Amino acid sequence: MTTALQTPAATRGRHVAAAAAVALAAAALAWAPEAGGEAARLGVVLVLQAALVAAWVLAVAPAGARGAAALALAAAVAADLLAASADPTGGPGPGVLLVVAGPALVVAVVHQMLRRPPRADVVGSLGTVALLVAAVCALALLLLPEVAGDAASPAASPLLVAGAALAAGHLADALLPRPAVADGVPRGGLGVLAALAAAVAVALAETGTAETVDVLAGLTTGLVVGLVAALAGMTSSFALADTAASGRRVPAAAAAGVEALLPLAVCAPALLALAVV
Image (cartoon, rainbow, N blue to C red; front, top):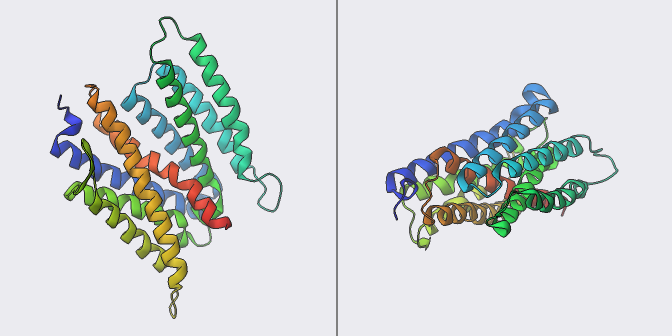
């Protein structure tokens, strides 16, 4: 069955919308503290988390969707409070977010037990909740300056490298998703190369000064972040393709939201790892 999501025009529009959304999200996160302090960045993260929850639930439509959305939103708020209150000079590190993710998975099991029988697709629903909780907790990492960038130098934000890679990959796949990575998945090898090139270019620009450019640091950061971004983008596209293959119509706005925000969440732990190594 061919759905609206799989038609060439719809696919191109989805890629363009996702590219614009992820570029806007990365820029907003990088410059929010300069405009309104850390509270502004917290507000942006909360909006992105809520948008991801809504987009994922609408796109995938898991069994027990309302309970899954409520649990994910509660986990998002708890993760944000922990990340925002973290002491950068000491105390628990980002691993404290496991305090949210662990109990949330237990609650997810209880949620399945409380569903009205017959309980269809218990494993699929539980997996959807687990992925969504992990994603919103990962977005909470964007509240850390080492991930989203220092308020004093927003143009040097490492998040901009990931945003550029994700946006470039979407735009390349909107123009020519070839050679296709898999049947039914509108992502191609050209998009991977575009993501790598954009990430390296932005990383080199951020590590450079008027006199010199740290080529090694820029190449390392760009290649690692670009590859993570390309793979994260493909993961979200595979999930949407699987839903479309089942014959269910996926709303275009929800599909674009998933392809913009889920990869951004996947990139956040990679950015944190690069910052601490």
